[in-house]
Structures are given as C-alpha cells and as structure tokens.
Amino acid sequence: MGSRPLDEASHVARAKRGDAAAYEELVRMHQAIAFRVALVAAGDRGDAEEAVQDAFVKAYRALGRFREGAPFRPWLLRIVANEARNKRRSAGRRAELAVRVAAAASGDAAPSPEAAALSHARREDLLAALGALEGRDREVLVHRFLLDLGEEETAAALGVRRGTVKSRTSRALERMRAVLEEEMR
Amino acid sequence: MNGLEHELRALAPLVEWPETPDVASAVAARVEASPPRRRPLRGLGLAFAVVLLTLAVALAVPPARTAIFDWFGIGSARIVRVDELPPLQLNASVEALGEPTSLADARRRAGFPVASPPRDEPAPDEIRLVDGRRVSYLWHDGDRIRLLVTQVPGLLQRGEILRKLIPPPVRIEQFTIDGDGAVFLTGGPHAVYLLGPNGSFEQDQGWLAGATLLVDRGGSTLRIEGNLDRKRAVELARSMK
Image (cartoon, rainbow over all chains, first blue to last red; front, side, top):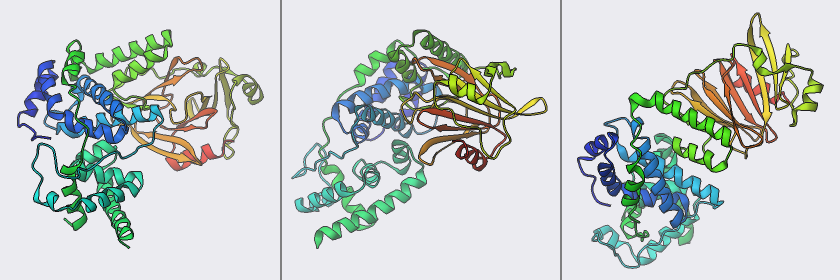
C-alpha cells in the first residue's frame, strides 16, 4: 500500500486551488486502499472500480469543504465507501466477503515472520470464521485488520462513530473466538 | 494485542486482493474541466445547486436528478448536509398551505391515504389542501402557528423520504416508529425538496424554525413541526392513524 508521503497536505492545498495534476497525484497515493474499501463495500470488482472513480471525482468537487490540516484519508474513505454501498444497493446485492488468502505468501512485500508462521490450515480457519460472522462483525474486522485501517478511518468507511468501531471490534473478536473454538471441537 | 488480533494482522499481507485498477488518469481527465468549489464561493455554489434543482423540476428527467445528487456527492442519500442554506423564504401566509377544507373533503381529494389528526390534541383549527396533493392540519396560538402537521404522498421508495438541505447547526436523529423510518431534526431551519408524483422536485420550506419529525408511512410522508421534543413528536405521530 506504500507509505503516505509527507507532502499530502501540500497536494491537497494545490488541488483545492484547482491543480488537477496535484489531485492526480493524491489519487495515485490513495487509490489502492480506496479500491479495497470499495470492494468490501460493493462486493463486486466492477462496481468497486466505478465507485472509486466516481468517489474521487466527487471528493475533488467537494474539496472546498475539506478542512485543511485534517487527515485526508478518512474523509476520502467515507466518500468512497458511501459510493460503493450505493452501487451495491442499486444492484440489489448483499454485502459479501470475497477475499482469498495466498496458499503461500506472495505479492511484492516480503511476508512478516508472523505471516510466515501462520499455517495454511490456520489461515483457512481464520477466513472461514470471518465468513461465519454476521456482516457488521465481519466488516469491522476486515477494515481494522485485513485492510489495516485505524479506528478513525474504519469509522469513516463504515459511517459510524469511533466509539462504535471500538465496541464492535471487541464484540466481533469475541464472537470470532467463539466460532474458532467451535471449529476446533 | 491479543492472539487473535495478532493472527488477523498476520493474515493481512496474505490476502489476495484483486489488482488495483489505475483510475488516476481517468479521474484527472474528468476533473480537469471542473475545479473544486472553494469556501468563499459556497453561497454561490449552493445558489447554483438550487438553479440545477429548478432545472430538474423543469426537466423532470431521472438521470438529471442523479446528476444533481452526484453533484452534491451523496448518491441516493436523502439528507444533505450543507455549509449554508439558500436563502429561506419562510412562508408568510397560511395561504401557501392551500385552501381551507374539511377532513372528509381533504381525504377525498388528496389522492393518497390521509391519517386523522393526532388523537390527543384538540381538533385542528384549520385543515388545508394544496392541489389535492398536500394536506395540512394547523393549530394556532394567537397569530402564530403552534403546531403544523403536513402529509404528502409517499411515492418515494422506502427509505427515501425527502431531500433536505441541512446546515451545520441542525441535529439529525434517525430511528423508526413502529417500523416506519423516521427522522427528527432540531436546531434550526432547513430547506426541503419533495419528490412529486411525476418525479419532479418541489421545493418546500421550513414553516417553523422549531423541531421537525418526518415519518415515512409508505403511502404518505408525515411531517410534524412545532416546539416539540422528540418524545412528544413521536407520540403525536403514533396517534395519527
């Protein structure tokens, strides 16, 4: 996903003045996380792509309302997730989790020792347990852990308060533990 | 961090996400021609929005509506938070609520199910009807309106009651009353757009600066305005069958 460059604020300021190139740069910085958040919310790749593109355009037009100095990513992710949920609703789909884990670690980032230590069977168990959770429990865990979003960003993407993210996360973890224990019996 | 959180974080880099599409160029091309609205222009921006809405009324074309709400950036959401309202022209006269009539006549001509006035209030001082499409119950207190209950056809899809422009001081509470979607607004005036029976927009205005309860009753949308707290407003709505 890459680290967020320090000059994000200056890109935002330039984009607010109508600098489309600066905005394009902002889009490049955030399109990966935006796409994944949209994918989780829309449940369909094509809709997620469309939602991300539309959301970036809307965010650009709404930049005048963005408070300078505030974190850009939560603000953006709120717009992205909203757009993606709207696409899902208009397609009449339910929110479904459609993620797979690699049988062996792959991708451009070297796996952490912790990831390498997670057996293939355990990965499948974890995903199965996630899949067995209620939608709200699952989505909060996916955002917090699989997408590695902070509480504020998760709150923005789910359209809830930060306190709700905290309480839902803790409840969802408890339920997931119960599901895993059940599977182990 | 406990064991399960640790494992979930370890799982994150192993998730096979579909490749991220590069939307940057497409977005840049789309935004190039339309610079973002800036704060000092927000009043003008909103005026422009109102012009667009007016245009939508004239055209009454569904894609135009979508574009307008896209323009606001809210998709199909029904409540729009805005920095400031277009100038609100609070209705100066009850004439705007239509002609005085009787309940039986209003029911006959309304074209949608009209609920009776609230049971635990005295009978309304007036019942007014607009174009057979809006029924209002009014209670006066001297020369001001103490309580106003308006019913309009509920031709929107469930969950899409009204398009309302809500400035920052207005608080919004969303809940349900016996399964009907409801919104309670307090803290100041707001602009309201109703979707008319032919798909057109109809601009409405806050009659009172007091609290407003909106209830989606399926066949009709109920709006209760006055100096009410949420509990009282809900009681009134419940007593209207």
